[in-house]
Each structure stands twice: as C-alpha cells, then as structure tokens.
Amino acid sequence: MIAVDSSVIIPWINGDENPETKLLADLLARADATLAPATLAEILSDPHEGAAAAEAVAGFELLDITDGYWGRAGRLRAALRKAGRKAGVADALIAQACIDAGAPLLTRDRDFDAMVKLCGLKLYRKA
Image 1 (tube, rainbow, N blue to C red):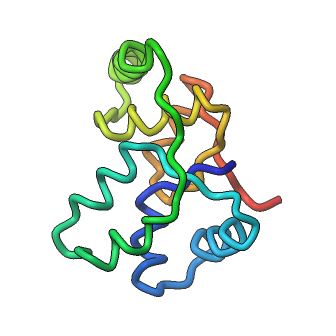
Image 2: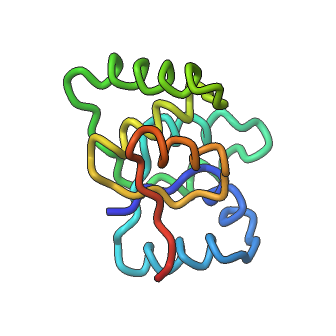
C-alpha cells in the first residue's frame, strides 16, 4: 500500500492533472492507495472542500495506529526540530504512521524531504 498525502488528494479531488495525481489514479486503479489517519483529518477539516472531499476519500483504507505511535511521532518531530527543520504536528503524525506501516508516501509537500533524510520515511515516486 502507498499512503497518499493531502497535497495530492486535494488537487485530485479538484480535477487537477499533475504527475502526482496521475500516480494516484494508477494507485486507485490497482487498489493500492491508503491514507494516514492524520491525512484524513486534514482533508475533512478543509472548509473549502466540504462534501466532495468526504465523498472522495470515503473508500480509502487507513493505516493502523500501533502501540507507542504517539511517542514515536513526538520524538520524530523533536528530532526534526533539533536539526532545525520544519516539523508540523500533522506532518510528523503522517510520517510516523507511514514509517510504522512500511508504507511509502506520495506527496507534493517538500517538507517531508527532511523526514526522509533524518527519520527513515520513504517517498513514492514513479520509477
């Protein structure tokens, strides 16, 4: 399974075509797309997307949250901040869910690049 970030889901919902939304279409065709729970919360909290967003993500499976997740996510964020990198709470939660599940993340958000280098997050890119 490949986790998909809101930076890809929102443009996909809006019908935007870019390399990442094309990858998402391929993942959906193979039933290989999933969401971190924090991604679902981000999408549903966007006041501009409303019912269309809720309907679009209704069929997505969610990554499981495992024991110790919250502590690991906090330590991940602390490591990023210590290294002087941007580390939003939602991004740290998404990254940790992906790391725990061994799921690469499809994203357009470059803030995750630091998590690849410092925390072991894997990104999904077309080969």
